[in-house]
Amino acid sequence: MKIIFLDIDGTLTEAGENVPPKSALEAIRKTQENGNLVYLCTGRNMGMLSPLLKYGFDGVVGLGGAYVVCGDEVIYDKPMDKDEFNELMEILKRNGVFRTIEAKDMTYGDEDLGDFLNGQESGNSEIERWRKALSSSLGIRPMKEYDGRDIYKIVIMALKDEQLKEAREKFSDRYNFAIQDVKEHACINGDLMNLAFDKGQAIRRVCQHLNVDIKDTYGFGDSMNDKEMIETVGVSVCMANGSDSLKAISQYIAKSVKEDGLYHAFEDLGLI
Image (cartoon, helix red, strand yellow):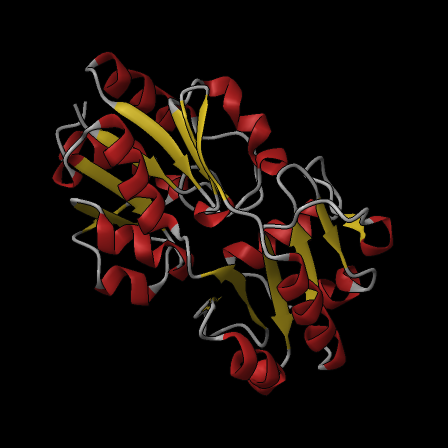
C-alpha cells in the first residue's frame, strides 16, 4: 500500500478552485482501487477544503499540518497558544502587515485585505487563493467578526520583507515564517506556523498511525509551503506550474494542473 499526499491549490486544482480536473479524479479513483490511500495535504483549513471532501479522500492533513485526520479519526490537533497569537497579531499590525487568521473551520481577514490583493499581479497560487476567497464560497470573514475561537496559523502579506523583522526577532525560535518565493510578485506572502508541526511532520504522524513505511509515500506540491512534504516523502513531485525552488529539490516534475499533470504523473510513477 502506498499513501499519496496531494496539495490542493496549484496541484490538485487551479489556485482557489474547488473542482479538480476530471483526469485527476479518475487517477485518484484508479489508485484507490489499486489499494492505495490518497490524502489531501494542504494549508487550507477544514472549512476551506470541505468542498473537496465529497471526492472521497482517505484522510486530510489540514492547516499545514496542524490538524490531521485519518479516516474519521483526528490524530493531531495543535492550535496556537493564545498569548503568542495575541502578541504576534499586535506586532504584525504595528508593522503594517496584512493578516488573515485561520481557525479550524473559519477564516478572518483584515478588512482592507481585498484592496491590497487587487493591487497585486497574478502568478502566485497563494495570492490567487486568497483573492478568489474574498469573492467566492471559500469566504473570508472580516476580522471584526473574530470571536476568540482557537487559531492555528496566520497568513501574512506585506510589501517589504523588513516589515516582518520584529516578528522574526521575537518568534523565529518558535514559528516558521514560510514565505513564498515567486520573484514576479511585488508582495511578500506566506504562512506563519508553529514549529511543532508542518506537512512533513504530519506525514510522519500518518505513517506512524497506519504503520506504513515513509518510503511508500508520495507527495505532490507546487509551492514552498510544500517544502517539508517534499523533503519527507519517499517520492517527491512538483508541478510544472510550481516554484523553481521546489522543483530543484523534487525527484519528479509533473505536467501542470491544466495539462492533466496528476493523471500523467500517476501513470508514470506506476500508481495506476
